[in-house]
Amino acid sequence: MFTTDDLTQIKEMNMSLTEIEEQLKRFKVGFPYLSIISPATVEKGIMRIPETAEKQYIEEWVRFLQDEHQVMKFVPASGAASRMFKDLFAFLDAPYTEPTTKSEKIFFENIDKFAFYISLNGSCKDLYGHTVPELIAKGRYKDVIYALLMPDGLNYGYLPKGLLLFHKYPEGNRTPVGEHLTEGSYYAMNRDREVNIHFTVSPEHRPFFEALVGARKSAYEMKLDCFFDISYSEQKPSTNTIAVDMNDEPFRNEDGSLLFRPGGHGALIENLNDIDAEIIFIKNIDNVVPDRLKPGEAYYKKLLAGVLVHLRHRTFEYLEKLEKGNYTIEELAEIYEFTKNELCIIPPEGGLSEPLPDYLKRKLDRPFRVCGMVKNVGEPGGGPFIVKNADGTASLQILESSQIDRNDPKAMEALKNSSHFNPVDLVCAVKDRKGKKYHLPDYVDKNTGFISKKSKNGKELKALELPGLWNGGMSDWNTIFVEVPISTFNPVKTVNDLLRPEHQ
Image 1 (cartoon, one colour):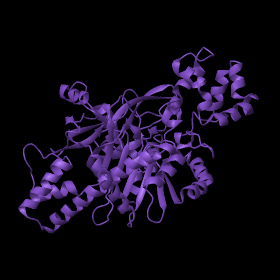
Image 2 (tube, rainbow, N blue to C red; image 1 turned 90 degrees about the horizontal axis):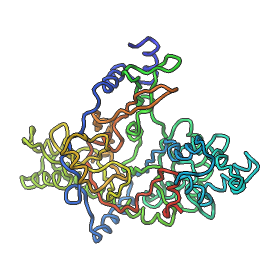
Image 3 (spheres, rainbow, N blue to C red; image 1 turned 45 degrees about the horizontal axis):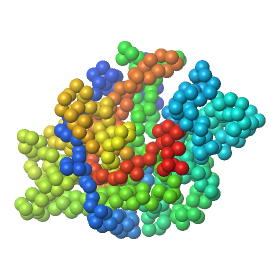
Image 4 (cartoon, rainbow, N blue to C red; image 1 turned 180 degrees about the vertical axis):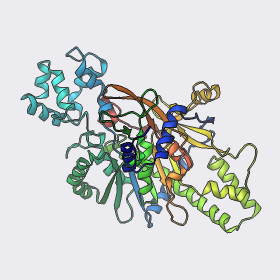
């Protein structure tokens, strides 16, 4: 099946033939659906923190920041903005010349409200010698869209979201990158007033991120009275996956080489693994708000972090007792109840196959994450469930719809009764009680993932997505779900989302 050139290509990507063969097998057999016990709800699996207790958790996080701890904000930022402008690309290709659909009309009726309007005006003058209002008055709507999306205009259709102007400010409009820097100073600044932020970017766009940060960092530092340590990484070629044709044979490029595609955001577990930090905040690049709303956002970030350090501290105390064998029968029962009731790790139905202390050490000595969950109001996103694991236990997991068997009545009932969804609002602890970093790829469920249909040069193909970063990528972590308000979730999935009140 593979030529000498194929083997050389595979080796150059730091991949093995065994890995490729396993991926090819996946296309034939697929991924098993996960066995859902029930949705995670406030009654079982999701913490609803009383208002009287919130202050205690937040104060615990503030105290934690005053000690010598390495804290990082991790922002996946490589995704292109092309899907944001799907409707506008469709308008460019449409046979009609004036706005017709609802989304097209909303865009043009409010065009001066976008933070990129001034830049777009300049682009239109450079390309056509006319301003945006002048082009619209002449019925040249498509010229305006061209100036916004295309490479010889603003190139917004091909740049990553992080580089687009999202919000207006008197001192200069701001991109998501600028918003993440500002936001980080609210809850991730250490006692030396340093804020560490890491962006994962695509190789072709990294220079633009570096130039933007280089031009603005000093101004942000002066305004916020802090110092930023900004780092970047790119998805590793070794995490790419092979593509196949519709007969499940390796898909080949026009030059005969094998086609590999990025393995999805789950591949970023390798990037996360390379970061030398103790506590890591994770948040999507497009979930940002203007400064007037940041105090509310930061409040709940600090709340999640406080829950994390509080429960991790208890976990470390229990682990120390277990490792030293320094516990009573009553204390062992207490630790068992903690794992079962507070970490929501349900033991196997048939009982344990190992001594109880060994079971407890195995379950407690793992990476730890606290995830914000918001009430389900129809927004896209994975959901919180209690799921059966390979070792017979059950635990809290975030599932995407593709992981749920639509033909399983029990799974569909759980989906129907699911009350919350995942806004990608995580705080992670990735070092053990002795300060050693966990090797995060060891905690991935490789039996999760999905297969999607794509195309290349007009030919259909199948692509393989690795376990999602906060789905199967963190499957074997200790997990806590905490209810947070919907106000913490403000993603920009389409350009018209920037017209929502929270982005104006």
